Amino acid sequence: MERESRSKRGRGMLITLTSTRSRVAVLLVAGLATLILIVFLLPPVLLSFRGSPIRNPRFVVLNPFRDRAPERCAETFLIKMGSGECAEILPTLGGDSKRKEYVCEREVMYPLIWWSLTYRRDTDQESNLEYRFRRKNYAAEDTLFVWVEKHGDRWQVTGYRSVY
Image 1: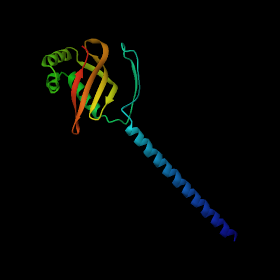
Image 2: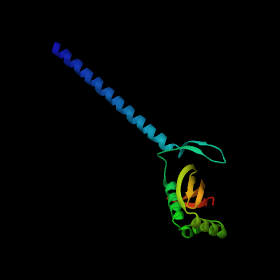
Image 3: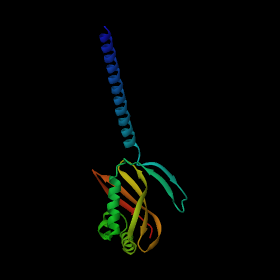
Image 4: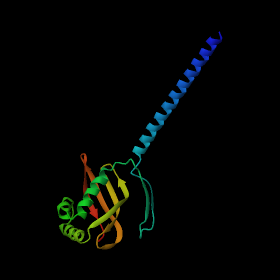
């Protein structure tokens, strides 16, 4: 009889342990799935603080899980600009041909040597990217802008503005 009551208690504890583990596992999976959904649905910029409009220091926390396709498109564009391929890539952008010539001349004189994403604004099919940058033969660090649009499944640069 004593043996029978021990085994019943043991089975009850086993059932309780198993159901507790199951509950914990289900809660962990549900919590993780919720966290992933929330993070992926958040915008690319989680938090930002804009300082003085003159010096433009900025504190930005970017979503580490954001879609980086617009940034890759802009990075490719900036790499080409910095390596002197301006004449090949600027004609794809709209705008005045004299302005494009001026931009290409300046890009050759002051090529980009460093840039870092400082802000990003997205809509469904567009992304406006703001970068801090440095140029060769140019002492100041400043801000440039690259606009990209989604065409089908590809992103394409549609605008560029910088200081020379």
